[in-house]
Structure formats: structure tokens, C-alpha cells
Amino acid sequence: MKKLTLFLSVSLFFPFAVFAQPNPNNSDIAYVKANYQKFEYQIPMRDGKKLFTAVYVPRDQTKKYPFMMVRTPYNVGPYGADQYRSKLGPSELFMNDGYIFVYQDVRGRWMSEGIYEEMTPEKETHKTNKDVEEGTDAYDTIDWLLKNIPNNTGKVGVWGISYPGFYTTTTLLSRHPALVAASPQAPISDLYRDDGFHNGALMVMANFGFYPFFTNRQDGNPTQRYAKQFDYHTDDGYEFYMKAGSAQNLSDKYYKDSIRLWTEMIDHPNYDQHWKDQNVLPHLHDIKTAVLVTGGWYDAEDLYGAIKTYETLAKNNPSTPVYFAMGPWVHGGWSRGDGDHLGDVDFGGPTGPFYREKIEFAFFSHYLKGTDLDLPKVSVFETGANQWRKYNAWPPREAVEKNLYLLPGGKLSLDEPKATDDNYDQFISDPDKPVPFINDITIDMKKEYMTADQRFAARRPDVLTYQTEVLDKDVTLAGNIWANLKISTTGTDADWVVKVIDVYPDSVINNKRTSSVKLSNYEQMVRSEAMRGKFRNSFEQPEPFVPGKITPVNFELQDVLHTFKKGHRIMVQIQSTWFPLIDRNPQVFENIMKAKPGDYKKATHRIYTSKNNPSYLKVRVLAGE
Image 1 (cartoon, rainbow, N blue to C red):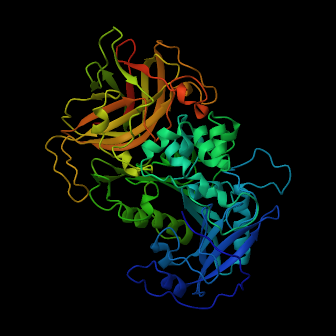
Image 2 (cartoon, helix red, strand yellow):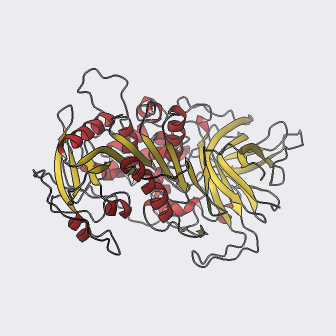
């Protein structure tokens, strides 16, 4: 989380200077001060509220510059016209090249006026010209900058990661003609499906300790005060959340309804109008701005947002340049560091610097400064094979849909099951002894879980495992994965967690650069997702299971580009708890947010593997593989 600053009235005169030669680090405050002058403004919006904005202008005023802007709820500090950031722009490449950098506190956050509303993309109707939303705030800001900051080229670019990624998307909704380039990076798109819930299962670990950060502003009064962060008094998240119980119990015990955004979350477990109003995807039409959507295959927070934002923009705006970049990164990992490994898994070399120079910088330089651009519409990193791939569309048009069937005896195959009898595998799911999401003691949602070894889970009796024979050639999955399960349960509700895993051979050589873990027979998670069973037919209208009745449960696991190498195996694991990544399901049909200790019941779950009731994953396999 970032920092912020104070309003000072300043002159619009910018003293002349030339850019200093880049120093070895290129990101220290001395370099920024030598080459940029900082100004702070309260920019008026159409309803009279003012948004705090810090502007860094090149001291060399012999030429004009385009704007690079970020709008954020996290703060634009340090505050004070004499207090400088140590880095400007998405990377040092921008800082060295010369732009007018703009940082703005969004409405209702930090030093900006107004009341903060979480994710307000676009309202259905505007009764007056003073009605506001994030798109109008972006429009008014851009308009003010163009008229009040000298020596600008009249072109604006905008970028942001995570929540600022969402605000980048809503800046597109301003549809301002000066906005020529935008890069939503790991953008939240539909809060119910991104950070908040995954297919109706509450992402409790990711959210509970996050929302206190927003309590520094409960009204319309600007502030630089940081909120007090939650103190767990332990490093053991598994034990903490087990003792705490339901989401409502967490709230009653620790927050007492003082955290508004957390309270809104647990008060709306279904996909109701509260969440629909926050979904930006339906509004992404009539966009003329060139867009670069960026995400990471191992983004534990907003993988869905990046994929769906690209998918929606490309579909609804066919004549607009829309680019897509995905690499082997965690949340925001492309913006910093080498991106050469995650946990025990190595990616063959640095991937972050390539993205920052050849994709991100090249994109903005072209649309803001007119440089040449040799960038495919889709730049995606193929994990497993550890190479960049270029495509004209995503998923690749040459990818062919196939089914990976779960078969009796723990087998996984492209061949359909032959037995007509209702074969099944079953396990007992006990909410009082849930399966951990990672084989580690942690209070945080460790991002390494997305590539972590799954052997600890495979050895539990409440996890079903299916795997292929040893592969005689490389198999590359490219695109989204759908789980199509036939299940039954003795309860009236249940969660279903499906994990796709790359099983290494005995002969694999341990990579000591990234890990001391023995990689022989390593079970690397490639993709995983949860489904809260009562939402299997509708996220708006949950319904119970009929005990013992064979029932389809279908859900999306999201996209991958991964090669299972010759000599490896493909594995699928299925379980019903994933704790405390998601909250526990009592396995009784009720409002899980408010479950009592006595509500949590054991249940026996069955996965069917017969010709009459097949369970399978629908995957996309690159043609010829």
C-alpha cells in the first residue's frame, strides 16, 4: 500500500532544466528532484468536490510532454510540494524519457473531498450534469489538466494496478478524446468474483485483514491519517480462523460493525444488486482508447479481472486496439523485480524487465509519443516450457477443445469412461478438520500457494486424486478450463475445489537457485478454483442439494498457458475444504456468513466417473499437441 500528501497553492511557472543522465538506480529522490518539479492541486469536479492531485512536471520546458496519470484509493504521497516520490511512472523507463506524471487521490480517499463508494463504474441515468461517478471524475480531471498545465501535448495515458487498475478501467468510461492510451493492470472488474468471492465462496483470508485500511476515511473530510492495521496476535492463520468461526462471528468479535466495507460484504453473500452496481464489465463499450490489459498467471487477487476485462473489451470494441499481456507473475509482480521464479518453480530467467521495456513502455511510447510499435495483440508467457508466445487473439484460435475425464481407479484420460454403472469415488468432508490451502504456517494469503507442491493434500483421505499416464509428448493447455462434475452429497450444501497439477518425474533435477525442496515427483499447482455448491445454477438464487441425488456442478477455473512436458503427468485433485483461503461451508444449506458452531456437519461426497454420469474438465489444447 502506498502513501500520500498535502495541498499547497503553487505557481504554474516551471523553471528550465535539462534531464540529467540516468544514474545506476534511476529511482532515487535526488534524480526525481533534479529532473522534475512537483505541484499539488485540488482539482474541482462538476459537483463542486475537489480531488487532491500531485503533478510532477519535467524541468526541461523546451518541449511539450504527454501526461501519464494514475488514480488511486491508496494515496499519492508523500504529501507536501517539497516532498518527492522516489519513482515516477510505471517504471524508470518512463521517468527517464520525460512525461508529466499525475497522481490523484480518488473521491473520498485521503486528501480528496467527498464520500468514498467502493467501485462506482457508471450509473444508469444522469438526472443532472452534476451527477458524478468515476468516469466523470476522470473526465473532469483530464479536462482541467489539459487547460491548466502548460507545455502538454494534449495526450493522456493512464495506468494502475489492482484497485488503481479498476480506476484505469473507469477512466476509459470518461471517453475523453485526449485519453489515447490506458493500461488496466490486475484490474478488479467484478468485486463479487474478483477479490470478494470465488464462485460464491468467501475469500476470507484475503479480505478480513485488508478492509481496516479503509477506516482512515469514514466521512468527507480529507486526511493524511493512516488507519490502524489489524493485529492477529498470531502467525497461525489456520488456527486463528478456526477459532473465530463464521464471517459474522469474525465481525462481532473483532470489528463490531466498525468496518463498513467488510460489513457490506458479509451482508451480501448472494450476487444481488449491491454487487451488480459495482461490476464494470457491462459498461465497457464504445471505447476508442488503445488499451493494454496486463495480468499474472499467479495473481491470487485479480486473475479474473485481467482476463475478463480483456475479453470484454476485445469483444465489445472490435475496431479499438486492445492488447493483452500475461506473464508468470503474482499480483503486480510485472512492475518490480525479475519475475524469474515463484516459490519452488523457476521460469528460466527474468520476465519482468522484458514486459516493462518491450510491452508496457513500447505501448505507451507509441500512442503518446508516436514511436514505432512492433507488439502483437496478445503476449503471453507459457509456463512449463518457459517461453513467450505471440498470438492475434486469446484464447489462441488454434486451441482445440477436449475433455479430460476422471476415471475409476484414480485415472485421468482423454478417453471417455466405458462403464455404464454409476462408478464413483467418495470421501468424508469434515469442516472441523479442513484441508489447508498451503503446507505452511502463515497468517497471510501466501501467493506461492498458486504454484506450491500439492503432495501434502494428495496424502489426505478427504482429497481425491486423478492422474494421467506418463506423457509421451508435450501437452499445452491454452485458455480457460471448465470443471464439469457429477456429484452427490449426504448434506444440503458443499464446496467443490478443483486443482490442475503438473506432476514432475522422478528424474527431474532440483533447481537450487530457487528452492532447496526436492523436485522429484513434485506436484506443482497450475490452476485451482472453488465453487460454493448452492450457487451452481445461479449466484443470485442459491438452492440446496437433495441428499443422495446425482447433480451436475459446473464452473470455470480460469485461463492458463502451460505445457506439461514429456515425462510429466497431468493430475486433478478434488476436495471440499481449502482453508482458510475460503471460509468453511457448514455443508448445511443456510446463510454461511452467520453460521453457528453447531451448524458445521460432516458429509460424504461422491464424484461420479461413469459413462452415464461422467465428470471431466473441458480444456483447450494447442492443435498438434
